[in-house]
Image 1 (cartoon, helix red, strand yellow):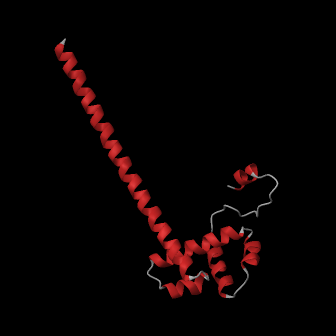
Image 2 (cartoon, rainbow, N blue to C red; image 1 turned 180 degrees about the vertical axis):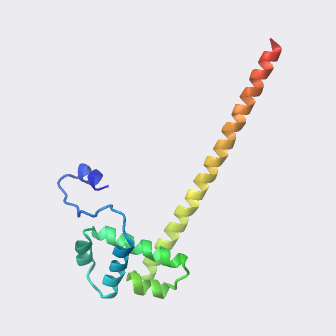
Image 3 (cartoon, rainbow, N blue to C red; image 1 turned 60 degrees about the vertical axis):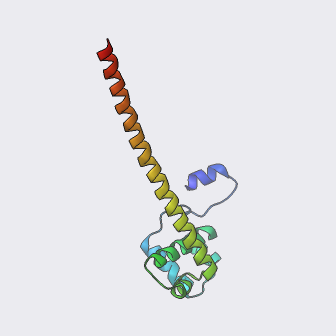
Length: 132
């Protein structure tokens, strides 16, 4: 990811962990830093990530907590996101999940459609052979 970003914008310097997978330890450290009230810019620098990356991880954590039936108040305390941001994140993730399921269903239907077409073609070939 970092290589792709640098190729698209070679003048910009990106932190070294940009686009890297988050470890459980790093995520725990982020929550600890948030609970201590450390500024997002400082957190981003210490994690060698962008501010956007930190905010994205906060939203990811908020959604994971929501899925575990954590109260909105608790999510606010842990992520330092406001209620509006949390609700927006939850709704976006649910919509994305529904779209993914819809796409998967469409792909399954397409597979059956293709199989049906193959069966029809085989039957047509048999009919042609019999007609000869």
